[in-house]
Length: 238
Image (cartoon, rainbow, N blue to C red; front, top):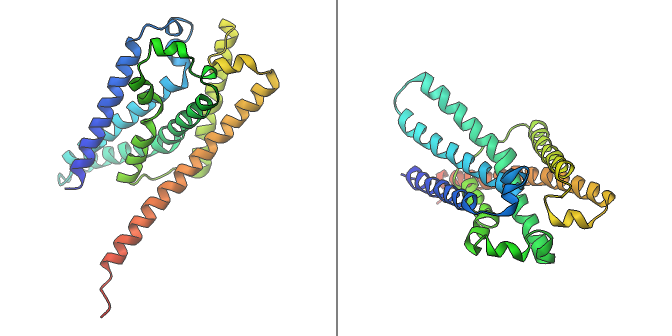
């Protein structure tokens, strides 16, 4: 019975991401018309990552319900592949990228919003949509981590994957600047080349740290739950 609320919750989160993406893409902003479109913004890439991840979660839940008790080995094999993909996406992309977007956005916003989210954007993006892109990502991914156990890949392969993503995005940002002459994020215009290199290096290190944080948090949540379940199973001493 515990599976049903989790299924409903994942469907609701998936629908919320679909709504956020549709509303965001419907906004006619000048930056959407320039080279790279929405894909030059990490926030948009993260929204796509989260939507795909929760889509895989919903698909896994449906497959699990259909496979249960069927005894079909091929279906069970496909289900295991889906679960492996779901777990890999949470570990390497959904958690570290999601937490990074929320943390870095609000830290820079609190320091000087013009550096990351100019007031001009308030004319295009309503407040609820801003929070949908930069706030609710964190509780949604923590809820998923708490409701389902996720098997992390080996640490070396996981860190290699998140490094590849980080460096790939940095190169993409630099390429957009090379083509257009403008940086994706306003604050990059106001710092020198050395500071940019330091910032890009720091963001890659932070991504790696967030991957390790997710791994530790996942282990803590499920080791604690396992210990509680084992304690309940122990006969009470009289």
